[in-house]
Amino acid sequence: MVTKEKNGRFIGFIMTLIICLCAFVFPVYAADLQEADTDAAAGIVQTDLTGEDMTEEEQAVAAPAQAETDLPAAEAEPVDTAAEDLPDTEPAAESADSSDAALTEAPDTAETDAVITETEPEAVSEEPVSEEAFETEVALAKYAAEPAAETVTASAAAIEAIKETADTPVPVVRPLKDGTYIIVSKLNGFKSLQPEDYKTDNGRQIEVRDCDGTDAQKFKFVSDAETGYYTITNVLSGKNLAVKGDNPGEGTSIVQNNSSSTLGQKWILVEKDGYYMIQSALDGGDFVLSLKNGSTGNGADAILQEAKDAASQLFSFLVSKPSVTISEGVYEISSALNSSMKWDIASGNMNNNGNLQLYKSNGSDAQKFIVSKV
Image (tube, rainbow, N blue to C red; front, side, top):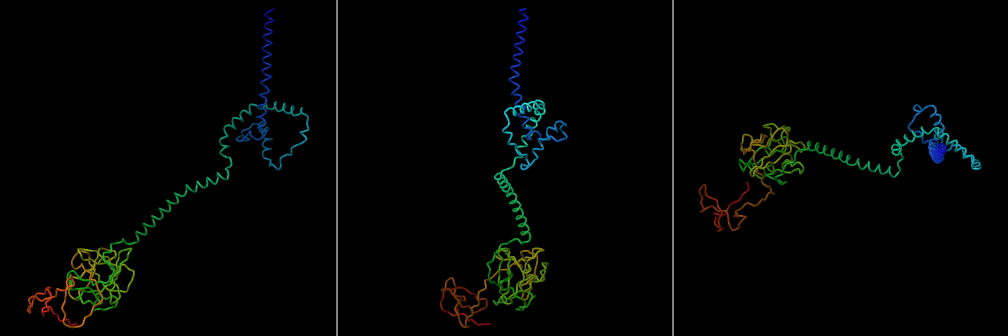
Protein backbone atom coordinates (compact mmCIF):
# COMPACT_ATOMS: atom_id res chain seq x y z
CA MET A 1 0.00 0.00 0.00
CA VAL A 2 2.82 2.28 0.87
CA THR A 3 4.59 1.43 -2.41
CA LYS A 4 1.55 2.29 -4.49
CA GLU A 5 1.19 5.58 -2.65
CA LYS A 6 4.84 6.43 -3.30
CA ASN A 7 4.50 5.52 -6.96
CA GLY A 8 1.47 7.71 -7.32
CA ARG A 9 3.25 10.65 -5.77
CA PHE A 10 6.24 10.16 -8.08
CA ILE A 11 4.06 9.99 -11.17
CA GLY A 12 2.19 13.09 -10.05
CA PHE A 13 5.49 14.95 -9.59
CA ILE A 14 6.63 14.01 -13.09
CA MET A 15 3.33 15.11 -14.64
CA THR A 16 3.48 18.42 -12.75
CA LEU A 17 7.04 19.01 -14.01
CA ILE A 18 6.03 18.27 -17.58
CA ILE A 19 3.07 20.66 -17.34
CA CYS A 20 5.32 23.45 -15.94
CA LEU A 21 7.85 22.96 -18.68
CA CYS A 22 5.15 23.10 -21.35
CA ALA A 23 3.70 26.23 -19.79
CA PHE A 24 7.14 27.91 -19.92
CA VAL A 25 8.48 26.67 -23.25
CA PHE A 26 5.38 26.88 -25.39
CA PRO A 27 4.89 30.71 -25.19
CA VAL A 28 8.53 31.30 -26.19
CA TYR A 29 8.36 28.84 -29.07
CA ALA A 30 5.02 30.29 -30.18
CA ALA A 31 6.51 33.84 -30.17
CA ASP A 32 9.41 32.74 -32.39
CA LEU A 33 7.01 31.08 -34.78
CA GLN A 34 4.84 34.19 -34.83
CA GLU A 35 7.87 36.41 -35.69
CA ALA A 36 8.86 34.09 -38.52
CA ASP A 37 5.30 34.12 -39.80
CA THR A 38 5.30 37.95 -39.69
CA ASP A 39 8.50 38.12 -41.76
CA ALA A 40 7.00 35.77 -44.28
CA ALA A 41 3.90 37.96 -44.55
CA ALA A 42 6.13 41.04 -45.09
CA GLY A 43 7.69 39.53 -48.25
CA ILE A 44 11.03 38.40 -46.79
CA VAL A 45 10.27 34.71 -47.19
CA GLN A 46 11.05 33.92 -50.78
CA THR A 47 13.73 35.67 -52.81
CA ASP A 48 15.20 32.69 -54.62
CA LEU A 49 12.29 30.21 -54.82
CA THR A 50 10.14 30.25 -57.93
CA GLY A 51 6.65 28.95 -58.47
CA GLU A 52 8.02 25.76 -59.95
CA ASP A 53 10.00 24.98 -56.77
CA MET A 54 6.98 25.50 -54.40
CA THR A 55 4.26 23.09 -53.53
CA GLU A 56 0.67 24.14 -54.04
CA GLU A 57 0.27 24.87 -50.32
CA GLU A 58 3.46 27.01 -50.31
CA GLN A 59 2.26 28.95 -53.37
CA ALA A 60 -1.05 29.58 -51.67
CA VAL A 61 0.73 30.97 -48.59
CA ALA A 62 3.27 33.04 -50.58
CA ALA A 63 0.78 34.52 -53.06
CA PRO A 64 -0.82 37.07 -50.66
CA ALA A 65 2.59 38.24 -49.44
CA GLN A 66 3.89 38.62 -53.03
CA ALA A 67 0.76 40.50 -54.03
CA GLU A 68 1.23 42.93 -51.15
CA THR A 69 4.88 43.41 -52.09
CA ASP A 70 4.10 44.15 -55.74
CA LEU A 71 1.52 46.81 -54.94
CA PRO A 72 2.75 50.42 -55.35
CA ALA A 73 2.70 52.57 -52.25
CA ALA A 74 -0.12 54.65 -53.71
CA GLU A 75 -2.33 51.55 -54.21
CA ALA A 76 -1.78 50.02 -50.76
CA GLU A 77 -5.01 49.43 -48.87
CA PRO A 78 -5.74 52.20 -46.36
CA VAL A 79 -5.25 51.34 -42.72
CA ASP A 80 -8.51 50.83 -40.85
CA THR A 81 -8.22 53.28 -38.02
CA ALA A 82 -11.24 51.73 -36.42
CA ALA A 83 -9.05 48.80 -35.46
CA GLU A 84 -7.61 50.99 -32.69
CA ASP A 85 -11.05 51.01 -30.98
CA LEU A 86 -11.32 47.23 -30.89
CA PRO A 87 -11.33 45.52 -27.48
CA ASP A 88 -8.07 44.14 -26.20
CA THR A 89 -9.46 40.64 -26.51
CA GLU A 90 -9.49 40.66 -30.33
CA PRO A 91 -5.75 41.05 -30.87
CA ALA A 92 -5.30 38.22 -28.42
CA ALA A 93 -7.58 36.06 -30.54
CA GLU A 94 -5.63 36.97 -33.66
CA SER A 95 -2.43 36.16 -31.85
CA ALA A 96 -3.77 32.76 -30.99
CA ASP A 97 -4.72 32.15 -34.62
CA SER A 98 -1.30 33.30 -35.75
CA SER A 99 0.29 30.96 -33.24
CA ASP A 100 -1.70 28.05 -34.62
CA ALA A 101 -0.66 28.95 -38.17
CA ALA A 102 2.93 29.37 -37.08
CA LEU A 103 2.91 25.88 -35.57
CA THR A 104 1.63 24.48 -38.85
CA GLU A 105 4.23 26.30 -40.98
CA ALA A 106 7.22 25.89 -38.68
CA PRO A 107 9.20 23.49 -40.94
CA ASP A 108 8.81 25.81 -43.97
CA THR A 109 9.95 28.77 -41.88
CA ALA A 110 13.09 26.95 -40.90
CA GLU A 111 13.90 26.35 -44.57
CA THR A 112 13.21 29.99 -45.33
CA ASP A 113 15.60 31.12 -42.60
CA ALA A 114 18.29 28.90 -44.10
CA VAL A 115 17.72 30.31 -47.58
CA ILE A 116 17.84 33.88 -46.30
CA THR A 117 21.11 33.19 -44.50
CA GLU A 118 22.67 31.85 -47.69
CA THR A 119 21.52 34.72 -49.91
CA GLU A 120 22.44 37.57 -47.52
CA PRO A 121 25.93 38.20 -49.04
CA GLU A 122 24.43 38.59 -52.50
CA ALA A 123 21.76 40.95 -51.15
CA VAL A 124 24.45 43.11 -49.55
CA SER A 125 26.41 43.35 -52.86
CA GLU A 126 23.29 44.58 -54.66
CA GLU A 127 22.65 47.50 -52.34
CA PRO A 128 22.40 50.81 -54.22
CA VAL A 129 25.68 52.77 -54.38
CA SER A 130 25.67 56.27 -52.91
CA GLU A 131 26.39 59.23 -55.16
CA GLU A 132 29.68 59.92 -53.35
CA ALA A 133 30.82 56.30 -53.74
CA PHE A 134 29.86 56.33 -57.41
CA GLU A 135 31.89 59.51 -58.07
CA THR A 136 34.84 57.93 -56.25
CA GLU A 137 34.65 54.82 -58.43
CA VAL A 138 34.51 56.95 -61.59
CA ALA A 139 37.55 58.98 -60.48
CA LEU A 140 39.52 55.82 -59.68
CA ALA A 141 38.60 54.27 -63.04
CA LYS A 142 39.70 57.43 -64.87
CA TYR A 143 42.98 57.53 -62.92
CA ALA A 144 43.65 53.86 -63.71
CA ALA A 145 43.00 54.48 -67.42
CA GLU A 146 45.34 57.50 -67.69
CA PRO A 147 48.66 55.56 -67.67
CA ALA A 148 47.40 53.32 -70.45
CA ALA A 149 46.40 56.37 -72.51
CA GLU A 150 49.83 57.89 -71.94
CA THR A 151 51.46 54.64 -73.04
CA VAL A 152 49.45 54.63 -76.26
CA THR A 153 50.34 58.27 -76.89
CA ALA A 154 54.01 57.60 -76.21
CA SER A 155 53.96 54.59 -78.53
CA ALA A 156 52.30 56.61 -81.30
CA ALA A 157 54.86 59.37 -80.83
CA ALA A 158 57.70 56.82 -81.03
CA ILE A 159 56.28 55.38 -84.27
CA GLU A 160 56.00 58.86 -85.80
CA ALA A 161 59.59 59.63 -84.75
CA ILE A 162 60.79 56.43 -86.46
CA LYS A 163 58.92 57.31 -89.65
CA GLU A 164 60.28 60.84 -89.61
CA THR A 165 63.83 59.56 -89.07
CA ALA A 166 63.45 57.12 -91.95
CA ASP A 167 62.34 59.91 -94.29
CA THR A 168 64.98 62.43 -93.17
CA PRO A 169 68.64 62.24 -94.26
CA VAL A 170 71.08 61.46 -91.47
CA PRO A 171 72.66 64.70 -90.21
CA VAL A 172 76.38 65.08 -90.94
CA VAL A 173 79.15 67.27 -89.61
CA ARG A 174 79.57 70.75 -91.12
CA PRO A 175 83.37 71.16 -91.19
CA LEU A 176 83.43 74.41 -93.14
CA LYS A 177 82.11 77.76 -91.97
CA ASP A 178 79.56 79.32 -94.32
CA GLY A 179 81.20 81.87 -96.61
CA THR A 180 82.65 82.58 -100.06
CA TYR A 181 85.63 80.49 -101.20
CA ILE A 182 87.85 79.67 -104.18
CA ILE A 183 87.93 75.88 -104.76
CA VAL A 184 91.54 74.89 -105.44
CA SER A 185 92.78 71.42 -106.50
CA LYS A 186 95.29 69.53 -104.35
CA LEU A 187 97.05 68.47 -107.55
CA ASN A 188 97.90 72.07 -108.39
CA GLY A 189 97.39 74.97 -105.98
CA PHE A 190 97.16 77.43 -108.89
CA LYS A 191 94.13 75.76 -110.46
CA SER A 192 90.53 76.38 -109.38
CA LEU A 193 86.97 75.48 -110.42
CA GLN A 194 84.73 77.74 -112.50
CA PRO A 195 81.90 77.52 -115.10
CA GLU A 196 83.09 76.72 -118.62
CA ASP A 197 84.31 79.83 -120.50
CA TYR A 198 82.98 82.09 -117.72
CA LYS A 199 79.40 81.45 -118.93
CA THR A 200 76.31 82.02 -116.77
CA ASP A 201 73.67 79.85 -118.52
CA ASN A 202 72.06 76.70 -117.12
CA GLY A 203 73.77 73.37 -117.70
CA ARG A 204 77.20 74.89 -118.24
CA GLN A 205 80.02 72.41 -117.46
CA ILE A 206 82.24 73.07 -114.44
CA GLU A 207 85.93 72.95 -115.31
CA VAL A 208 89.36 73.77 -113.88
CA ARG A 209 91.33 76.92 -114.84
CA ASP A 210 94.30 78.99 -113.69
CA CYS A 211 93.44 81.00 -110.62
CA ASP A 212 92.58 84.59 -111.53
CA GLY A 213 90.50 85.78 -108.56
CA THR A 214 87.45 86.65 -110.72
CA ASP A 215 83.85 86.09 -109.55
CA ALA A 216 83.64 83.11 -111.91
CA GLN A 217 86.03 81.27 -109.55
CA LYS A 218 84.22 82.24 -106.35
CA PHE A 219 81.59 80.00 -104.79
CA LYS A 220 79.28 80.76 -101.87
CA PHE A 221 78.87 77.89 -99.36
CA VAL A 222 75.66 77.78 -97.29
CA SER A 223 75.01 74.81 -94.97
CA ASP A 224 71.75 73.36 -93.63
CA ALA A 225 71.79 73.08 -89.83
CA GLU A 226 69.46 70.04 -89.80
CA THR A 227 71.08 67.87 -92.46
CA GLY A 228 74.59 69.32 -92.69
CA TYR A 229 74.27 69.55 -96.49
CA TYR A 230 75.92 72.44 -98.32
CA THR A 231 74.54 74.42 -101.25
CA ILE A 232 77.40 75.74 -103.42
CA THR A 233 76.50 78.78 -105.55
CA ASN A 234 78.73 80.43 -108.19
CA VAL A 235 79.07 84.17 -107.48
CA LEU A 236 79.19 85.18 -111.18
CA SER A 237 76.18 83.19 -112.47
CA GLY A 238 74.14 82.88 -109.25
CA LYS A 239 73.57 79.21 -110.13
CA ASN A 240 74.20 76.16 -107.98
CA LEU A 241 76.79 73.43 -108.39
CA ALA A 242 74.73 70.40 -109.50
CA VAL A 243 74.96 66.77 -110.64
CA LYS A 244 73.69 66.69 -114.24
CA GLY A 245 70.25 65.08 -114.41
CA ASP A 246 70.46 64.20 -110.70
CA ASN A 247 72.17 60.99 -111.84
CA PRO A 248 74.66 59.67 -109.25
CA GLY A 249 76.42 57.41 -111.74
CA GLU A 250 80.15 57.11 -112.43
CA GLY A 251 81.43 59.87 -114.76
CA THR A 252 78.33 62.13 -114.55
CA SER A 253 79.18 65.75 -115.37
CA ILE A 254 79.11 68.51 -112.75
CA VAL A 255 77.26 71.58 -114.07
CA GLN A 256 75.62 74.78 -112.84
CA ASN A 257 71.82 75.07 -112.66
CA ASN A 258 69.07 77.26 -111.23
CA SER A 259 68.47 76.70 -107.53
CA SER A 260 66.23 73.75 -106.56
CA SER A 261 65.63 71.58 -103.49
CA THR A 262 66.80 68.33 -105.14
CA LEU A 263 69.64 66.32 -103.62
CA GLY A 264 71.50 66.77 -106.89
CA GLN A 265 72.36 70.27 -105.64
CA LYS A 266 73.28 69.19 -102.09
CA TRP A 267 76.85 68.40 -101.08
CA ILE A 268 78.63 66.86 -98.09
CA LEU A 269 82.15 67.97 -97.17
CA VAL A 270 84.41 65.18 -95.88
CA GLU A 271 87.72 66.33 -94.36
CA LYS A 272 90.88 64.39 -95.32
CA ASP A 273 94.26 65.54 -93.95
CA GLY A 274 93.58 69.24 -94.31
CA TYR A 275 91.78 68.87 -97.65
CA TYR A 276 88.15 68.12 -98.45
CA MET A 277 86.21 65.71 -100.62
CA ILE A 278 83.04 67.22 -102.09
CA GLN A 279 80.55 64.34 -101.87
CA SER A 280 77.13 64.27 -103.54
CA ALA A 281 74.08 63.84 -101.28
CA LEU A 282 72.36 61.72 -103.93
CA ASP A 283 71.60 58.05 -103.19
CA GLY A 284 73.23 55.25 -105.12
CA GLY A 285 76.80 55.26 -103.89
CA ASP A 286 79.67 57.17 -102.37
CA PHE A 287 80.37 59.53 -105.27
CA VAL A 288 82.52 62.67 -105.05
CA LEU A 289 83.54 65.55 -107.32
CA SER A 290 86.72 64.65 -109.24
CA LEU A 291 88.90 66.07 -112.02
CA LYS A 292 88.45 63.92 -115.11
CA ASN A 293 91.48 61.70 -115.76
CA GLY A 294 93.28 63.47 -112.91
CA SER A 295 94.09 66.39 -115.19
CA THR A 296 94.64 70.01 -114.07
CA GLY A 297 95.03 71.38 -117.59
CA ASN A 298 92.87 74.38 -118.40
CA GLY A 299 89.40 73.19 -119.40
CA ALA A 300 89.57 69.78 -117.64
CA ASP A 301 86.03 68.72 -116.67
CA ALA A 302 84.71 68.14 -113.17
CA ILE A 303 82.78 64.83 -112.92
CA LEU A 304 81.39 62.37 -110.34
CA GLN A 305 83.50 59.36 -109.43
CA GLU A 306 83.51 56.79 -106.67
CA ALA A 307 85.52 58.01 -103.69
CA LYS A 308 89.13 56.74 -103.67
CA ASP A 309 90.94 59.44 -101.67
CA ALA A 310 92.88 60.33 -104.82
CA ALA A 311 94.51 63.79 -105.07
CA SER A 312 92.23 64.56 -108.02
CA GLN A 313 89.27 64.27 -105.56
CA LEU A 314 90.72 66.56 -102.87
CA PHE A 315 90.35 70.33 -102.70
CA SER A 316 91.18 73.22 -100.43
CA PHE A 317 89.04 76.32 -99.95
CA LEU A 318 90.71 79.72 -100.11
CA VAL A 319 88.86 82.54 -98.45
CA SER A 320 87.79 85.05 -101.06
CA LYS A 321 87.87 88.65 -99.98
CA PRO A 322 86.82 91.74 -101.94
CA SER A 323 89.31 92.62 -104.67
CA VAL A 324 91.90 95.25 -103.83
CA THR A 325 93.29 97.36 -106.67
CA ILE A 326 96.49 99.40 -106.51
CA SER A 327 97.98 101.87 -108.96
CA GLU A 328 100.78 100.80 -111.28
CA GLY A 329 104.25 101.76 -110.08
CA VAL A 330 107.34 100.67 -108.17
CA TYR A 331 106.80 99.13 -104.74
CA GLU A 332 108.66 97.59 -101.87
CA ILE A 333 106.86 94.55 -100.49
CA SER A 334 107.08 94.00 -96.74
CA SER A 335 106.21 90.98 -94.64
CA ALA A 336 103.09 91.31 -92.50
CA LEU A 337 104.98 89.47 -89.72
CA ASN A 338 107.77 92.08 -89.65
CA SER A 339 107.50 95.26 -91.72
CA SER A 340 111.29 95.80 -91.59
CA MET A 341 111.81 92.66 -93.67
CA LYS A 342 111.42 93.12 -97.47
CA TRP A 343 111.24 90.98 -100.52
CA ASP A 344 114.79 90.88 -101.81
CA ILE A 345 116.67 89.36 -104.75
CA ALA A 346 119.67 87.68 -103.16
CA SER A 347 122.91 89.50 -103.95
CA GLY A 348 121.09 91.53 -106.63
CA ASN A 349 121.39 88.54 -108.99
CA MET A 350 120.14 89.40 -112.50
CA ASN A 351 120.38 85.85 -113.88
CA ASN A 352 117.67 83.22 -114.28
CA ASN A 353 116.81 81.27 -111.15
CA GLY A 354 117.94 84.08 -108.85
CA ASN A 355 116.72 83.49 -105.31
CA LEU A 356 113.86 85.56 -103.85
CA GLN A 357 114.23 86.00 -100.11
CA LEU A 358 113.29 88.16 -97.15
CA TYR A 359 115.98 90.58 -96.08
CA LYS A 360 116.30 93.57 -93.83
CA SER A 361 115.20 96.76 -95.57
CA ASN A 362 118.15 98.56 -97.23
CA GLY A 363 116.51 100.63 -100.03
CA SER A 364 118.42 98.88 -102.81
CA ASP A 365 116.92 98.12 -106.22
CA ALA A 366 117.04 94.45 -105.28
CA GLN A 367 114.07 95.23 -102.96
CA LYS A 368 112.06 97.24 -105.51
CA PHE A 369 109.43 95.73 -107.79
CA ILE A 370 107.42 97.11 -110.71
CA VAL A 371 103.66 96.48 -110.39
CA SER A 372 101.60 96.71 -113.59
CA LYS A 373 98.04 95.69 -114.45
CA VAL A 374 97.57 92.88 -117.00
